[in-house]
Length: 450
Image (tube, rainbow, N blue to C red; front, side, top):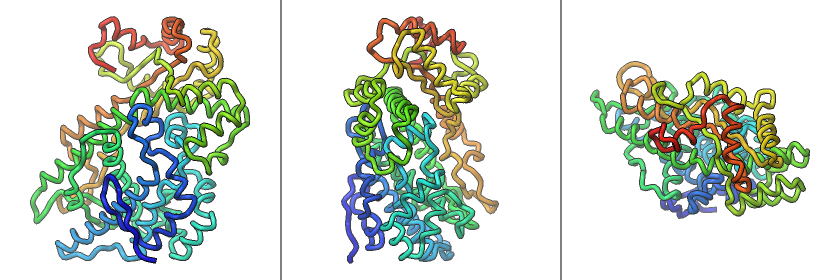
């Protein structure tokens, strides 16, 4: 079998070997064609229908480019790359398969509503896909089954060197470099990083790092490009990943799944073979719960719930904002759902508003809104690599703070109950103990637009 060329809308021609094609052509990888990379974001950005399949191909292609860049950069200073052919095969295959365990709307269920464990933390799920006959056979034939399993489950200590994992799924990595460019492209944003960034990649003491010096001189262009990456990541988080309508849609899909699980009609394993469209159909037909059916129908017709109560982090001098301590308390109750606090609050609000089950949904993301890319290891002198965060650059500090401020807490209800919006707002203020920032803005007491 010969190499095969795939034409990609983002990277152009991408070349894959027979060994890679043996994995690409498996049913487990082909299933990813039906799982959108950005979940419910296509309800806001209609062209954002790119899938985890093309993202996986792109991540694999960029892993190859990173490996080659490291070889070139080390050769320039007279050093040999520590990446041997066996390591190279592990990195490339891990990049290709890094999303193989994803289920429909996976990040929504795992990171936002915490219905399931993260896809890379569930051993049984990883085994289901890696131990399927075509995948296992292909990996064993290539002699990399155990190493790829360790990489995909983030067991970095089991790998020969840290850079094997870091190139695929670290801070600035093949995964990030593909989805930043791909998500921006399909959401219609013109922002893009300069591929000059590849000239700064290196390996120091087994660690994948960004070199900010050349021939003993500090590389201002390298720092500027890293900051540009952080800006792109912030912009996509603000406008896409945490867009308020996308968050509402994700909360609705999650609530429908929760109700079906409560009825013992669906379990995690049922989702392993499903794609986005088949999942919604399966959810509606398997559950037979009216609340589930209404939620799925609302999603399919883009009848998104209305936010009636809203909180966000603000500076202390800004009237109406909540503190970090308040945020952590809300996270404990409504993100981790301690003692079923979120479920009970939703039920209580619905009961007092006389709204049917599923008509009220609380959205509370994790308080850990750190810009993880700012932690990328950099090399700037003869000392050991350190985090970019420690560089004490005002732009990096500002972007990191702004990213943390993107945290939002809200309650939304079905648009069928518009006459209950005002009562819902008052009720939420009583239950949660904070003034509704939607109301404060309408009264002119807040000067920003959320």
